[in-house]
Figure 1 (cartoon, rainbow, N blue to C red):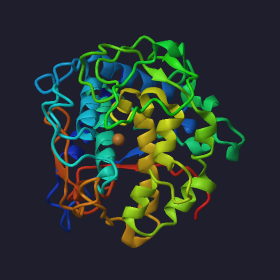
Figure 2: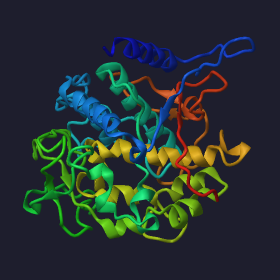
Figure 3: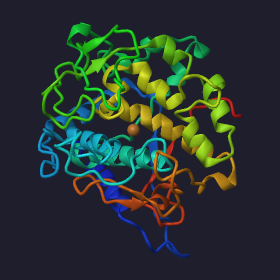
Length: 376
Ligand SMILES: [Cu+2]
């Protein structure tokens, strides 16, 4: 019964994923039927169920990257290895199982937004092509879950046990520990109110990558951990107080960095607010990607970048910031976005700047249904 729409979407996605070099006059646009990403809050329950089904399908498919990361057990793990790998510095003594570290990392540098955009696009593509998903990647508009909208973060529909990703964990005594790196312990900053998630579609899912930078090993398989910090999230993720001051910035690098280092002077920007608000595995700088909410959160981060890109004509192709998180180098449109052979080819940043691929030189083909918030 799903055959026809499935074929249409699959062939569309396949053609959109190919680099289109011939975008000259007389040719149709490379992105004729963009995927339309909608807010989770605006999805119907059948649409939510279909997305969750597809995510669970990725957990049920075999990993394709075991030649690089033997601990990967399923297709979802393949995406986890990407993020853990790219977040780790190439230090074989710290991470002996790491076989694939390349590049300068993906946080606190110019490639932060393009890398996460391309990672979410490839995840969405896997959901469609490998699991027959019939929708587009939803985004978690967490501004709707703040007092600004008369709501509470921990009561967000994304935490629904039936039509969401399950709620907070319980039993903090089972929280997996992450060995400190450079003296930091990623899970140490928040009060323990959570633990293993016990409801929703991922309650029984085990994870063999992480916590932290571990590619399997001493901790072995662990549960999905959440440790929801509502007050922190509500104070960091409002549209008026937190997103608007960010998108009013005019320089790309200030916007990118401002996702993590808030222009308001708050402890966290919206990027950290989502990660630390869910907390647990999501708080982990390496293995946050284990929690399927990672892609919902990063779709929203991407939404904010997309929103900013369309506020002024010069913003669409604006790029910059350091290549290395220590501040050296200059990120350009030619800087590489590293994926892996088992997820997607590496591309230059220019290929993921325009989500509608209007000049035909890119690899993306999607857009966002506007969330309808007040403009700056
Ligand atoms: Cu990241």
